[in-house]
Amino acid sequence: MKKFYLSIALLISGLFSFSQEYDPMVDTLINKIELDSLVNFVRILSGEDSVVVNGTKVLIENRIYDSNDLAADYIKQTLEEYNLATYDQVYDTDGRNVYAIQEGIEYPDQYYMICAHYDAVTAYCADDNASGTAGVLEAARIFSNYNFQYSIIYALWDEEEIGLIGSGYYAQQAAGNGDNILSVINMDMIAWDSDDDYLCELHAQDYANSLELANYMLSMNNVYELGLAPVIQYPGTGASDHAQFWYNGYSAVLLIEGYWSGDFNPYYHTVKDRISIFNLPYFNKMAKLAIGSLASLSVPDVTISVDEFFATTKDLQMFNYPNPFNNKTTISYYLHEDTHVTLTVMNSLGQKVAVLEDSYQREGIHEISFKRNDLPSGIYFIVANTLSGSTTSKMIIEL
Ligand SMILES: [Zn+2]
Image 1: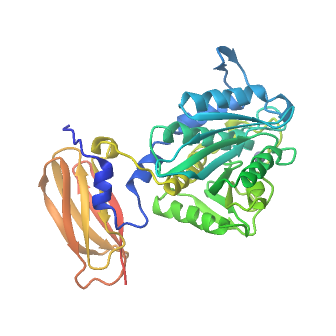
Image 2 (image 1 turned 90 degrees about the vertical axis):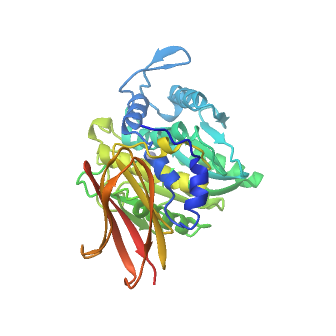
Image 3 (image 1 turned 180 degrees about the vertical axis):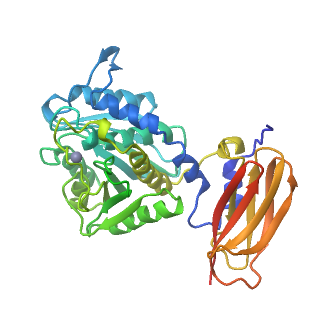
């Protein structure tokens, strides 16, 4: 396959500047989330697998607040391995938050935060909350390779279970220092879904822009087709670390499984809360929602090769810009190999309204201009068929 050493940043500024919603770089970052990696973090944090910490092979037997230094050491070591500026925040004998900061290239003094508590009440406690902790570490693993316009804080709190103490300490300090934290995404229990309905909850209260943040995350699920069924709980629960940010004037949301919707982990706070009872596809999607939202908010400023951008098992990648559009849009697609291509436009009833292409084409980037003509406003689908499969992308014609 030929190499296209185009800068994707250039491509984006040239092609996507009209797109208000979909950002292909955010999509690329979301697709870098790996379930295997999430599972590995959880297995280590919940004492299923041993790990080498500070040169010694250890098993994290529990993360109870007064005996979880090993877990904190592992978290710190992991963040340091990603070359992030990592901090221990020791606020009393047993209290120790661990966090890392990735400086934004455009707005270093404005922060987006992703966080979770790492402490627990007994052994294992995989869902509560090795799951959320793994989400934070996965974000750090991926994002540390890229630049973002805004600074990102990856934070893991201690002593949530005995009264939101670690996060309370941090939030109060931050407010006292006047830290400009624009949004906080808190993950607490993101891996239980017993009936595969993919329902999840976004908890917000009337502090700062918390409800807007919840709505933003709701729309992320749609725009990036993550496949969750999120509901906003408003006014939501104050029973996790995000609440401490609310009380200090910050915008914050809790992402959690069906806490108030009748599908909450029944093994919560027991030694039966192990990774064996996770709904792994659900866990993966929950991480994608939280991490994808963080990516979108922090604005990736990324230069990668077109090869990397389009690296996928599919033989064709496609998008259109602007989208939504009023009069005219450009459909751009990339073929991984020479192949026969048909491109058709379907309306929301599944009726074919246009055939844009039906020919054998070379690998590489292709563009087609599409005029609305007399089509009514609404949702349409561009369907691309090649010899090895088909891809569909949504386009919206405005009023
Ligand atoms: Zn929890």
